[in-house]
Length: 109
Length: 115
Image (cartoon, rainbow over all chains, first blue to last red):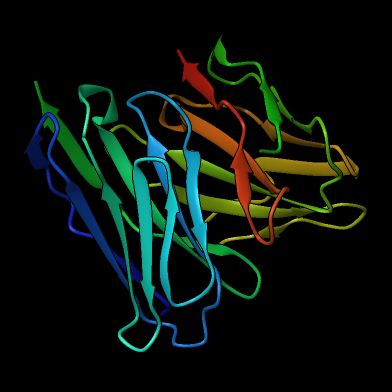
């Protein structure tokens, strides 16, 4: 069973801090990885995609990929209360996408 | 990013009726769309993969006769919940690949309440 694992949280960080969200996956052959943000009652919204080892930055968000360790992370710098949401890690499989259960992030004002 | 539109966003129906939900890719063609359902405070559950011009592929445990999926064009997939019951009340979300390689974009979701 191919899996994507995330800590369910909640992860609480103070406003302005760095939030670090982690994800591990079981399929060593996976090539494409995604982070989604989902606000309560809304559908998921794509934040970042990453395909190569290393870091990829987009504004306050940095995705990190380590294929050898089968590990993907998302860093959110200068966290804002509006970042409070559930963050889903997703891995593209051969025919479908495997989603983690999500990490709930709370940014405290 | 690519835009996926879903309609209706909210529907309330009586038990025993059927409800159709539409999912459209607005600025790209989608040969494959995915349908998910999500219960409160739970993760996404893939129901089926919708393929343009062919039968949908259903996940284990999902009744294909109850959840009818039609993907008649490259921009439209529909999910029909037949003979709906209160236990079918859920948040249904479609998605499609568009934009960058493999990037999956979601519709706004449809909240179904069966009375």
